[in-house]
Every structure is written in C-alpha cells, then in structure tokens.
Image (cartoon, rainbow, N blue to C red):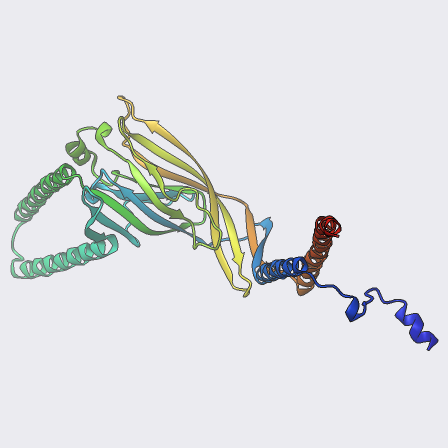
Length: 370
C-alpha cells in the first residue's frame, strides 16, 4: 500500500469528485471553439506533413557531348512567314541557315487568327524529292540521247547547256517576282507569323536568331525597300531550354516587344544553368534554367545589317540539383503535440477568465437582490 500511495502522489492530473465539478455555458462555448481550432490546426499540420518541399544543391557540371533542346514559340505580327528564317551558330563553328528541323510556321491574319500552316521539314523533303526525281529523269534522258547521238560535236553540247542555263535563270526570275508580289500582298493584308518548335543544338555557347537573313539581299531590298522598314516586333509566348518542372520560371515567357517607330535589332543575352529535378518517386528530369538581359539597337541610316531578334546563350559550369523531400513522421508528431497542447492550454486559460468575469458581474447583482 505504501508503494501505491507513493505512485499516486506523482499524478500530475488530479481529478475532483463528480459532484464538485461545475459546468457552465461559457465553458461549453470555449470548449466548442477550442475543438474547432484544434481540428483546423490538425488538418493543416496533416496537409503540411503530406506535402513535399524542395532542397537545392550545387555541383560542377560534368556533362559532355549532349545536345541542348531549345523550345521556341514566338509571334511576329508584322512579318509574313515567307520571309522569316531561323538561323543558328555555335562556338564550334557550326553555322546553320534557315533551320528546318521540327520548326513550324503558322500564317496569321491581321487579327492574329491562324490562316495557314507550314511545316518546314515536309517542305524541304518534298523539294529534295522533286529535285532528285527531275534530276534523275534528266540524267536518264541525257544518257539515251548520248547513246543515240554519239556523233554530235562539242559545240552543239555547249549551245544546249547555255540554253538550259538561260531557262533556269528565267525561271528563277519569274519565281522571284511571284514571291515578291506574294509577300507584298501579305504585308498589305497585315499578315503575321507564328514560329514554334524545337531546335537541338550542340551543348556549347552560341546563338540563334530569327530574321529575314534567309532571303537574298536583292530580294529583301525589293520587298522592304530598305532595312528600316523591317518591323521585327515580336511576342515571346514561350522560350525554354528543356522540359518544365514544378515551380520553374522562365523569365522571357509572355514578353511583348512592339516597335512603333524606328526598327532595330533585339539581343537577348542568356545564361543557362543546367538543372536536374529529382521527384519524390526517384524519377530524374534533366532540364535547364536561365537568366536573361536584353538590349535593343536601333537602326542607323548607314547600317548595312538587317534587323533581327538574337538569342545569345552561354552555359554555366555549375549544375543545380533540386530534390523533392518529405518531412519525417517524428517531426509531424512534434508539431502536432505543440499545436494541440498549446490550443488546449489557451482555451483552459480563456475559460477561467470568462468564469471569473461572469462571477464578478453576477455576484453584485445577487447581493443587491438579497
């Protein structure tokens, strides 16, 4: 019995007899409010525990020999699709003019609605196949004539070659004239162009630009009558260097640059940061973040260059690893005890204050009645 009595003395939560407990209306209100607060805080802590957070880690980039995907989605409201080209050059010396891999061009009317599509790769393949077929047919017919007419002299052959060359030049001039008329009509109608797709370039510093540089300089002069009339106003809907992960922010998205007066060249200087995003499921998503600064150079009367939109990019030697992580269950229990215990203690204190306040108000009234 002595041990049991000693243990009972250690009880930190002594209970009064049932008949000594006095329940009040104010205590019930405080209890209901306390339970509602504790339930709300419990759900908040549970959601906080089930959610993930990201941890960032930096290290030296060791990747070599990979390609860099560039996702482009831009609108040029004042330039038809026939005059726009995408060119790229990098520090390795690789220079590609009028890129045609996975690039689409959408014709837009003056209201910005789509009126036609053009897939550059399909057009190039059709052009090559048509050219090869014509070339093979020409070679076969040439061989037959050569077999049938072995005795013809070299002078006749030279005259034939000259006539063929003149016909090609004549066809070129006719096609150029038709193209100039078509583009001028499109510009009169207020046509624009939307360029989007993916460029796969080498993983080295370089630049790509969208301009009228794919045109012959004389043809460009015939169309625009001077470089000052080339309006490179543009809207960048999306520009990224890899797939998107949760929380990424691409600073050039929804960028609008409209020229009202003098034309010029836009240059965006981009610093690319290689990034790996590791999901809680251990899946790894390789991508890239970037920062950017921009510069606009207005055209001068003596400039011989043509307006364009340049994107000059360089890669950072540091890679960022972003990991999704979840909080430990012990951390959840600790926060839950702190929140629920604090709420219980606060509601108990509030109940005592309200009880004393009610007693202080009602007791003088009872004494006055006596």
